[in-house]
Amino acid sequence: MKLFKRERYLCKIRGFYHADDIIKVITGVRRCGKSSLMQTIAEEISEFDVPEENIIYIDLDKRGYKKIRQADQLEELIAGFEKINGLKYLFIDEIQNVTGFEEVINAFRTDGEWSIFIIGSNSYLLSGEIMTKLKGDGGKRI
Image 1: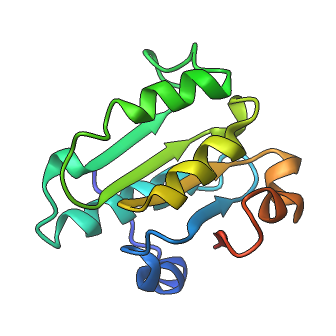
Image 2: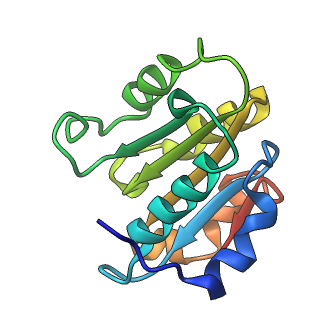
């Protein structure tokens, strides 16, 4: 499927693609195109000769991931990718489905070698509270 490049948003986030010290948070109402934007970002990153195995896309609404609802389950899933060498690009869609995800995501951010992008659509993610939970400057809202 060909994705429409939403340049207005891509221009705002391109400078952060390779940043492993911040969590990129893409928020918005349901069905506004957040997932498509994240897929476009993943495609652009792959154009930088990033190995395919270093681009990790987890959609928590999809089969195989729907049962991941607790922080420890999410941590175990992500830890399975730690053996990959180099900077890993982690994309997680529907992050609000996991209770306590903030601590897990923040812990991987502090490990380095993870460029993290998360998407969500509930009111909690749309509020400023998430930025505090992601350690203040640890998140960048797009």
